[in-house]
Image (tube, rainbow, N blue to C red):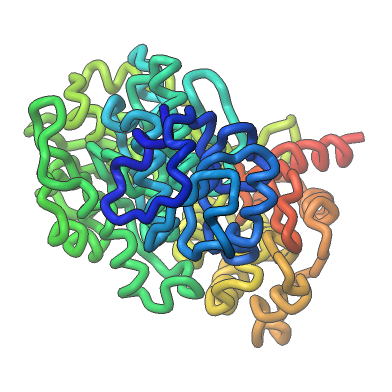
Length: 501
């Protein structure tokens, strides 16, 4: 695509140095490290770095089209087209959509938002669709997936350039569907701008990210943007679809801001479109009954927890309502569902105690998991919990409630690092412990998470339950500015094997 075709979509742009406008644009980037010959470089004012400071450098590397908010000195003397816009952050979404030829319009895009359940629900949907012989792409916390290829996830929802590039890769590899997690940060920051969403799911809303959103109202407003994104147009001759969890009071807010058609799911309200009840658990699996379209049928999934029944209902409605599969097709696909990495994942290496890895990192999610485990724990079993707080340099207000929950339900606690960033682990943990240091309940503080994992495994005795909370399938720890590769499940497996030696 030539420069002039790329920037022609911008309404309010001041162009300097027009002699390069017929040059083919080789790539669209906002990272100086990715610049190559004839790149278009978009100067973003980021948290830690302002791309405007690197304009000379990227031109020396071969960039021939530079998008800026602030003009450099003597722009006419630079060996590149300079385009001044009001907001480079907003412009990058427009240009990415243009550069990749509106890729999201060529896919069925299903977006999941909520505090908890995004990863489980999105991966459920992807697995069920693939069992029905559809080729899917996934963008979320665990990984970015394009067909059968997997890539590390840098953010739950990447920036607009990366988002559109991934959609384009899905189109080029004949994917039919893109299942994405829509984080509140991404929605508030416009990372999903010019993503043509067909079906949006709301799971729940509990306290998280208030360091960024300030209030629960601000947090909810950010989530609601997904539903206003659904717009007014039809896709495949049908209106866009919103799937809402009736059990969460914020579902009414999501309904108010969208013009899409709405279906609901619930574990509490029989009038919902899909209602689940009679939930029972055994051997790490959950059975339940769904009432839907005046029919009743039994379902079993290889996951624990009523909240995962709720997540399944969202996935079920996506396949039945948006994709219009029959109940028989969906139930057949459900039998092939294997669970989701790091979401109530049972680790069984032949040990004589139970081990569970879960992503629970907010007070609501942690309490749900621990209530679930306590409900099925016998008097002779001990519940050992390992956890840190993922919000280093972020929402410290979650620490005290997390600590309260751990001391309420666990028999023994191992506190450790999660994503401390620049905060001392000891400070984070002491804020979690709060006034509980006087409680008559054993706990330890071990800064190194791998060492802490080994400690939790070593103190477990026959029939005990050990919960590793907070990381789940997240493939890294954030320490300082670095994302350090980390695999909780493999670390737990290695610890079990060492104990068995």
